[in-house]
Image (spheres, rainbow, N blue to C red):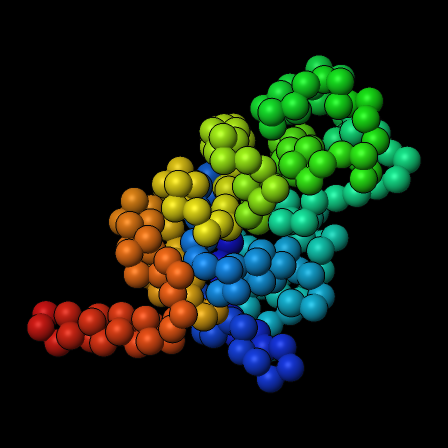
Length: 251
């Protein structure tokens, strides 16, 4: 189990994450849903151990062990990886070399071809260079294929539809399902309720805190109704807290 316990993170005295608590059980599909600027990508960086995103308070636990002090390399060895929103560019490296980490991943040409096909690209891309000759959508698909090749325990997909056309939602769902079928815990970060529905459990993030959590269909419907184009997230949070308080009193 991967856990965030009472995590607080501030940049230049601005609170980004506020007493954040989340749990991700092994082998399940999760979605972190919310508008842009609510702290979703910050959560991805924090889980991955990016130095800039170490919390001022709170901790990250993996199977009961505190890994808050561990960096990206140490966490990757523990089986955690992320496909970041901004896709990679490398001069002079082919897609096949990128997918196999220059041969460090013992995989065949057929394995790489299969991963690319799942991401919506044909085998000709294995010869292409991962550079600016590729479109943003093509680079994104290659990065998603690379995640399939890694065979990690926890995979975070940060805005996987970024740069990919609307017709590719089926591709993203296929990748999520393929990863999950191999026992990988998938954490998808998105502002699209369509993607959110392909998960087992959902967290709705607002102003750096968990606004609601529960069944993906319910959370996606609530998000669409209450959070779409919301300009006053703090008012939403206070309204939900007041509603939950009233429910508790009545109970």
